[in-house]
Image (cartoon, rainbow, N blue to C red; front, side):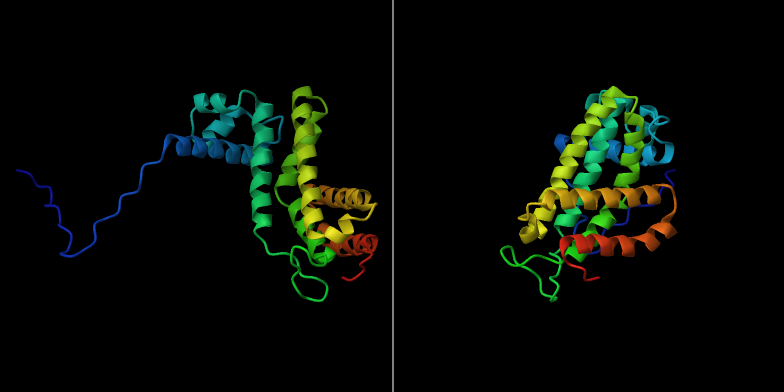
Length: 227
């Protein structure tokens, strides 16, 4: 005797249950690659570069070793690609934010006056205390004795700096025309990365205490000492 319950038919007039479209091969590959990159960042922050293994990344990503080897042949290639993935996503999030307000409270248009340097500094500060930079510091330390990692990381660092410069030029076009703009931006980035080291060492309370004063000093360098 079959004791299984009879299937219950859907109520009359009910819409059919939608079926999700099957993912294409390209979508499956992209999902596998993204899972590897996200898992790699997590492992890098948890274990550090020297203790990170591709086996741990594969396990966390829940993909096969063959998939990992297909996309990334070496550990250095995988970790630098994971940083690019993280910064690309962060850059996309930043690009979606509305322009910073001018000092008079109005939003600038593309050809109008500069945005507020204070708002831009706050945004750069937030970027430098995101998980990108703890991961990057792990790699900076390891790269000192790893030629392959150092080469890959140097290229990544140049690309990241170029993207930050372009973003600042877009948001502060008038200031970007100043002959000392590059030197000023280098000073800003050096200060922010120094503060990121404080955050990296787990001294978040000190970081929050230091930022207002450092922010004021950096604003004075731009010629805008408004808080």
